Every structure is written in C-alpha cells, then in structure tokens.
Length: 468
Image (cartoon, rainbow, N blue to C red; front, top):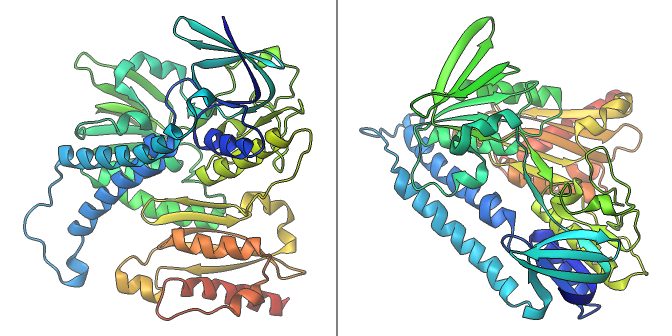
C-alpha cells in the first residue's frame, strides 16, 4: 500500500473543499485534496446553474403565453422543443463545469488524489480507488464531502423511474409527466419549471410548506399563488408502484376523494443528506449531532477533535454555495495555521428561491424570532398593487420585515414576490451593517421601482414604533 504524509487532508473536491484547499495552501504546500467522484461543484453540475437554465427556458415560454395583458396577441401555440431546451441546458451547464475544472487542473498533480476516503483513526485515511489503496497520514483534516438527495426506501423499487435533480439535467428531451415529491427549494423550482415547459407535473408536499418560508402570513400568500398555477397535494398517504407499462402509479386520498395518477417519473426532492455516514466516523472519538454529523463551531468550523474541521453541505449548517465557500475558507485557513485558530467571517443570512414569483429571506427568519414576538415590530407590504410590479404585470406577493422594538434595529425579512433576488441583497446588506429601520428609510429609493415596496414595509414598521 502506498503511503502519503501530508499536513492537511481535505476530503471532497466541491465548493467547500476547493475553497479549503486554496486557504490551506497559503500556509503549507503539503495539502492533499481527495475526491471520490468528480472534482467540481454541485452548483455547476446539478444545482444552481443548470436549474436556472431550465427555469429561464420555462419562464420564456410562460411569458410568451401571457402577453394579452399588454395587448400583444400571440397567434397559435407556443411550442416547447424539449430536445432544444435540454441541449442548451446541458451545453451551458458543461461550460460552467469547464470553468470549475479549469481551476482544479491548475492545482498541482501531487496535491490531488482520486478515491473514496475513510477514516481509519484520528490521523489516518484509507483512500480506495478501484483495486488501489493509499494510506494518507495527516496532521489536520477538513471534511467537505457534500450531500446527496434524501430518499424513501420504498421508492427504490421504481428503478430508473425514480430520479433526482442530477438525472433531470442529463435528459435528452422532456418527458410527458413527472410526480415531484417535495415542495422545498428543489421541488418547487424544478416542478414549476417543468410545468411551464408543458410537462404534466404533480407536486406532493408536507405540512403546507412552500420553499423555505416560515412566516405564516407570507406562507399563506405563497400557497395561494402556487396553488393557482400548480397541482399541489399536501399531507397525502401514498401507495406507489410500477405498472406493466413502466409507468409510476401513485394512489392517494385528498379531501376524502381517492385518486390515482400515472407519471413517467417520480422526482425525489424531499431534502438532502450530508455525506458523513460512510467515511469512517465510527473510528473517531468525535461529537456528532442526532443526524450523525460532526458538531462544529460555525465561526471556526472546528469539530470536537481540534485538528479536524468540517465545511459545506456536509456540516449541515447552511447548505448554500456561498456559505460552503465561506466555511471552506474558514476551515482551510484554520487547518493551515493550526494550532492557531481564528474566527472567520460569517455573513448575514440570505436565501433566494428562483420560482416565479421568487421567494427570499434575509437576516433572521420568523422561525428564529417567533419565541420573542412581543419584542418585535413587523412591517409589511403587499405587492398585489405595488406600482412598478403592476406596470410589469407581476403584481403578486407579500413581504414582512422584522425589527427590534427597543432599538429599531432591522432583524430580518421573508418575502414571496417580484424581484426578490434583488431585494434580498439590499436587506442582507442592511442586516450585516446592523442598520435600524430609520437608517434604512434614509437610504435613496428611485421611482418607479419594485424596491419601493421595501420602503412601504419600512414605513409600516415605523408607524408601529410611533404608535407604541
């Protein structure tokens, strides 16, 4: 067995792992990046970028079908060329992946190792690549093994009719029908996109949840909006099978009525599972949470074993690309300078779902504030008649912002509505700068723009401060 000695071993070559590698290399040349599948990011391959390509195609068709409001008459059917849609999705996806791989190719060859890494003890990894084994003896390590789609065991009997988001982006054309299980980020984005491209979509969810919304007022508005466009079923008991024609058969009951549908595929989008259950953590005396994920300080990414760090989706903290990059940098920096440990920059929370209308949160979400609701002022705005939104024919949505009753400091916001991706950034910046509602109102607002809705919500909050 070949043996490699290294200062820092980084397990996983995705966003967090690559970020950790660069950070650690600033302090030592002896850094080894280990990857068991493909170097590169989930975002570029099967996440953020290909999904936005599919969504853009879907919205182009949807917009072409809904021009009557403006007096523009489209003659005939707006057709979807499934092969052309998927050809562009894959071509552009491969282009983005190429940029990532170009960065990886610039890493020194002696700093990369392909194979599946398993902890043998607190300073040793066994890396398996086919029949070849490599022993890696390390001083410090960063776990950056990412995550995978969560699955219900009973669904596995569907064989290749059970798909995840990775599979969607490898299609050569679009199917006729899909049942999407999960109304979170992935399920909502892909479900609506496929629906707008002409695929018959059935969405199944739990508890009435839409996206990542936790504010009950915003959630109710989102339910009304998406129920008006999509066929969504919540909290059903399902029996799932495969018929003789190779179709997925779903039997369920909704409002006392028994239903049966047939689809080409079942798309599993019920969440993601950190890849920490098969890397030999049982061989380490490391503290884990109820999900089996190593517990880590979010400011240092240090686990209970001081020389081992964790970053990205595998940490199960905030599964977003920019957070993975930040965590990777923090973990890699501390692994490189160990035993000197420094707290890294953790930015204010910002989350966007690219449905139509979009969903966002910035700063603290309602779920983290509701236990002290009597200490909070809530300002809100409806986008149903907001000026610029109405001009554009996208006037649907609601936003609520939260502020500390004593200090007036802006705490966070949740929203479903137009231009949420842009509003999210304005509010996240305000939160990170610890601005008050009054300071935010002193900022310039142009007219007419959708962002004027933010000012309306801020003014609503101020009126409640004054009334109190």
